[in-house]
Image (cartoon, rainbow, N blue to C red; front, side):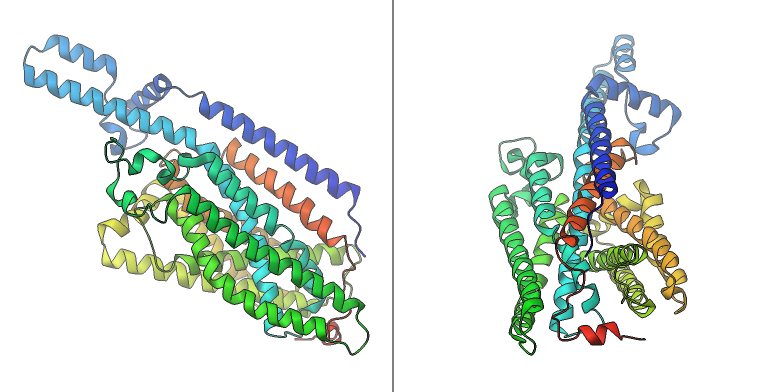
Length: 459
């Protein structure tokens, strides 16, 4: 049985404290940026051309004033006033983007770790529904990871509601008010679905369903360990609820991806988006399973886990990476080829303003897994799987970053204190909760009818 060590508790606590401190510092810094600061910054950028044509139209207030005083023509004066007004609007927009950054950084990290746990829950259900014989040795690891689903998902929803229109512009009541300057006809047309009350109600339904399955699956799994020999009733219950849950999951995961990610840009939508998010969460979940299994084995635990189990986990890492790439390309290629302005702007923004993270995450999520994990022998080497896993997790964090940041902070993105702090904060919380859950029960699901097959599994 695994015992949560004081060292791991300390590491988790340090990560949480340091992460919270860094994020708090970034939050304080961004929210003390004033309109005058932004005007000065934009004027400097315009003079140096550091942000290209998008900022080149900004006109410094002093220049406008001097232009007005030296020219007596009314038409010229009106142009100067218009330029000044445009400059003020642009500066205010940039200021809001800077203020949005710490909220977005926190949300990206919160969602990233939540989706790992949710992907593990789906993978766990698939093992029962398929009556897989290779994986029962890993069930306690999967159950430990899924323990984070409830707190992780609640944190994501809490951040979304707290941040409000800093992340989701449709949460601003002015967007659906016809008398407001901010009124958006398209957002107003979607207000029957995109409203805070509906968002919270749907989220509670999603989280409630996921958590109920997790609770009963864990309960039946532990009960099966204590059942008399030959009694398979709890395993049969696990099989039935797994099949039912997967139907529930495939619907709620899609709607969750629309609500929690795609609606940050309510003008854009993709029919492939739910599957795209699903592929990302599955590869991250299997990667974390492999890393935790290798860690526990290195501590002298899970000795029955052999290199064939590690090979199969790495094979799923490879397979889901290819599946993710297929969905990414399908979504990108169809939108790029059709070149419909309302759709293609999503990728134009990311290619122009997020060039490095956009193409970098494709290399990290496709090329690296392809090259590192294609060879069957390499899938059996623990340190090699760990190395590939680190790259994959980093790449999928950047993928979530690319989904959220362009709609909230525009081209004002950076990997700095808010982003690093948020990652450390939730990494520490995830580690503590997962390893705490793993430590509560024996690491072997001894009552599972396929446990002997799993112990003698060889690929």
